[in-house]
Length: 184
Image 1 (cartoon, rainbow, N blue to C red):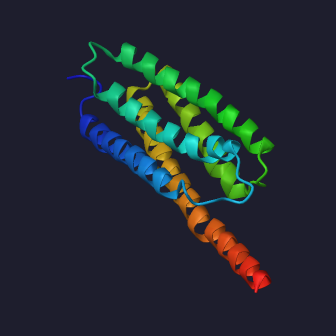
Image 2: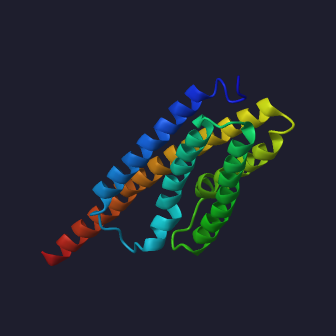
């Protein structure tokens, strides 16, 4: 019996969810692509939309790593540790992008785009080292980090969509109704 026994169903569910949500994210981005956004720039997508797909992709990658038929624990540990390390670096990049963006981020933005992803990726990296000492704790930490990234992605996707639908559309409608009144 491998140390990953019992985790296959968990990662099939989490990985399938992440894969489906990546596809849904592409559909939504395509649907809102034609909505004009006042003062929009490419940096907003790199700051707020791209990390969502990256987090979903990381969960999908973790699911693949954890369900692969490894001959032992160590190859999987190396790969999930790399995912954690790369994720920590990526969180720093998102942090830098958020500081340079024209939109003034609120606490919730910092929490879900920088702090929680950094914590999830750091937990992945840490759990890769913990595997030698505490198998079960390392595997549960890995699973918790995957779930956290999945829920971060869900939150961020929902936040982005509601922002475009409720905030940007309302701005657009008020601009068009205001300019229509001036023409008459």
